[in-house]
Image (cartoon, rainbow, N blue to C red; front, side, top):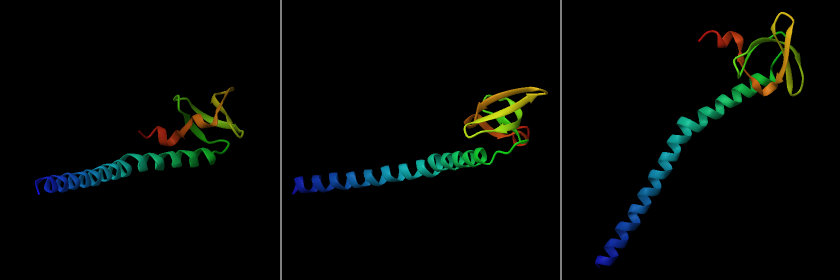
Length: 101
């Protein structure tokens, strides 16, 4: 009788532990994983909709105006007559949004 009681109590403990683990994963998903995926999707949509003449900020903090677009690269004019070619994935934000911080 004692052994049966101990086994039932141990089994119930494992079930509550599983419920707790599921709850922790759900909390992590809704507060950490899901918002990060949403932010990455917004940045990807922004990069896909770049246009010539748009002012942007790179991940390195360089402000410039887009002069030419390629599939994987972007040519930025960072000063009058100074152009640099960068990877499209290093474009981070619109320059107007970046200066409103």
